[in-house]
Image (tube, rainbow, N blue to C red; front, top):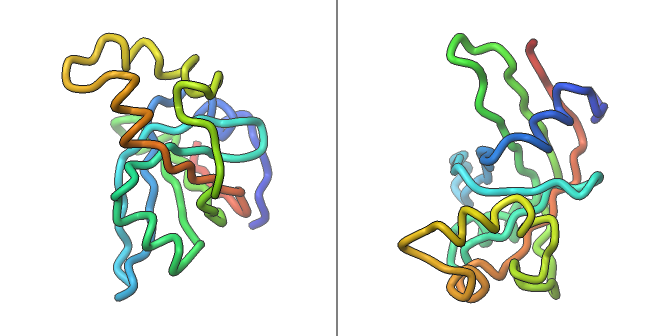
Length: 137
Protein backbone atom coordinates (compact mmCIF):
# COMPACT_ATOMS: atom_id res chain seq x y z
CA UNK A 1 0.00 0.00 0.00
CA UNK A 2 1.55 3.37 -0.98
CA UNK A 3 1.97 6.00 1.68
CA UNK A 4 -1.25 7.84 2.38
CA UNK A 5 -1.35 10.39 5.18
CA UNK A 6 -4.39 9.73 7.33
CA UNK A 7 -5.59 11.63 10.38
CA UNK A 8 -4.51 8.69 12.55
CA UNK A 9 -0.96 8.70 11.15
CA UNK A 10 -0.72 12.50 11.32
CA UNK A 11 -1.81 12.43 14.98
CA UNK A 12 0.94 9.94 15.87
CA UNK A 13 3.55 11.91 13.92
CA UNK A 14 2.66 15.14 15.70
CA UNK A 15 1.61 14.03 19.20
CA UNK A 16 3.67 10.94 20.02
CA UNK A 17 6.90 11.53 21.94
CA UNK A 18 8.63 8.27 20.99
CA UNK A 19 8.55 5.93 18.03
CA UNK A 20 10.16 2.56 17.47
CA UNK A 21 12.72 2.71 14.66
CA UNK A 22 13.55 -0.67 13.15
CA UNK A 23 16.70 -1.07 11.12
CA UNK A 24 18.15 -4.32 9.76
CA UNK A 25 21.57 -5.65 10.75
CA UNK A 26 23.98 -6.95 8.07
CA UNK A 27 22.96 -10.49 9.10
CA UNK A 28 19.29 -9.67 8.40
CA UNK A 29 18.12 -9.31 12.01
CA UNK A 30 15.53 -6.58 12.62
CA UNK A 31 16.62 -4.23 15.41
CA UNK A 32 13.82 -2.07 16.88
CA UNK A 33 14.71 0.75 19.26
CA UNK A 34 12.60 3.48 20.89
CA UNK A 35 13.77 6.95 19.97
CA UNK A 36 12.78 10.63 19.96
CA UNK A 37 11.67 11.99 16.60
CA UNK A 38 9.95 14.94 14.98
CA UNK A 39 7.91 15.50 11.83
CA UNK A 40 8.59 18.32 9.36
CA UNK A 41 5.38 17.81 7.32
CA UNK A 42 7.10 15.50 4.83
CA UNK A 43 9.82 13.49 6.63
CA UNK A 44 10.36 11.76 9.95
CA UNK A 45 13.54 13.18 11.46
CA UNK A 46 15.68 11.65 14.19
CA UNK A 47 18.79 12.98 15.88
CA UNK A 48 20.67 9.76 16.52
CA UNK A 49 23.42 8.93 18.95
CA UNK A 50 26.56 9.40 16.83
CA UNK A 51 27.87 5.93 17.72
CA UNK A 52 24.58 4.01 17.35
CA UNK A 53 24.63 0.76 15.40
CA UNK A 54 21.51 1.98 13.56
CA UNK A 55 23.71 4.31 11.50
CA UNK A 56 25.82 1.44 10.14
CA UNK A 57 22.64 -0.53 9.50
CA UNK A 58 21.14 2.35 7.49
CA UNK A 59 24.34 2.77 5.49
CA UNK A 60 24.04 -0.92 4.55
CA UNK A 61 20.25 -1.04 4.11
CA UNK A 62 18.25 2.17 3.80
CA UNK A 63 14.91 0.40 4.26
CA UNK A 64 13.49 1.02 7.74
CA UNK A 65 10.16 0.96 9.51
CA UNK A 66 8.77 2.98 12.35
CA UNK A 67 6.04 1.90 14.73
CA UNK A 68 4.08 3.94 17.21
CA UNK A 69 2.83 2.66 20.53
CA UNK A 70 -0.71 1.32 20.35
CA UNK A 71 -3.39 1.34 22.99
CA UNK A 72 -3.18 -1.27 25.76
CA UNK A 73 -5.67 -3.39 23.81
CA UNK A 74 -3.58 -3.17 20.60
CA UNK A 75 -5.81 -0.64 18.90
CA UNK A 76 -4.52 2.51 17.20
CA UNK A 77 -1.53 0.63 15.77
CA UNK A 78 0.48 2.34 13.03
CA UNK A 79 3.52 1.19 11.07
CA UNK A 80 5.26 3.33 8.45
CA UNK A 81 7.89 1.91 6.10
CA UNK A 82 10.40 4.31 4.71
CA UNK A 83 13.73 5.04 3.12
CA UNK A 84 16.28 6.40 5.59
CA UNK A 85 19.09 8.79 4.74
CA UNK A 86 21.87 10.00 7.01
CA UNK A 87 22.02 13.73 6.39
CA UNK A 88 25.61 14.80 5.74
CA UNK A 89 25.40 18.34 7.03
CA UNK A 90 22.73 19.39 9.47
CA UNK A 91 22.31 21.89 12.28
CA UNK A 92 22.79 20.58 15.82
CA UNK A 93 19.64 19.72 17.78
CA UNK A 94 19.78 23.03 19.67
CA UNK A 95 19.48 24.95 16.39
CA UNK A 96 16.47 22.96 15.16
CA UNK A 97 13.27 24.77 16.13
CA UNK A 98 11.01 21.74 15.64
CA UNK A 99 13.23 19.53 17.80
CA UNK A 100 13.56 22.11 20.58
CA UNK A 101 9.82 22.84 20.53
CA UNK A 102 9.13 19.14 21.10
CA UNK A 103 11.97 18.12 23.45
CA UNK A 104 13.51 21.31 24.82
CA UNK A 105 11.68 21.06 28.15
CA UNK A 106 12.65 17.39 28.53
CA UNK A 107 16.30 18.34 27.99
CA UNK A 108 16.09 21.27 30.42
CA UNK A 109 14.56 19.08 33.14
CA UNK A 110 16.91 16.11 32.64
CA UNK A 111 19.45 15.34 35.31
CA UNK A 112 21.69 13.02 33.27
CA UNK A 113 22.16 15.15 30.12
CA UNK A 114 21.90 18.74 28.92
CA UNK A 115 21.64 20.61 25.63
CA UNK A 116 25.42 20.76 25.24
CA UNK A 117 25.74 16.98 25.56
CA UNK A 118 22.76 16.42 23.23
CA UNK A 119 24.41 18.65 20.60
CA UNK A 120 27.67 16.75 21.01
CA UNK A 121 26.39 13.16 21.27
CA UNK A 122 23.24 13.25 19.09
CA UNK A 123 24.37 15.33 16.17
CA UNK A 124 23.72 12.74 13.43
CA UNK A 125 20.43 13.46 11.66
CA UNK A 126 18.43 10.67 10.04
CA UNK A 127 15.74 11.68 7.54
CA UNK A 128 13.09 9.09 6.69
CA UNK A 129 10.88 9.42 3.65
CA UNK A 130 7.63 7.49 4.24
CA UNK A 131 6.78 5.14 1.36
CA UNK A 132 3.90 3.06 2.72
CA UNK A 133 1.84 2.70 5.84
CA UNK A 134 -0.34 0.23 7.67
CA UNK A 135 -2.77 1.12 10.42
CA UNK A 136 -5.40 -0.56 12.56
CA UNK A 137 -8.05 1.59 14.20
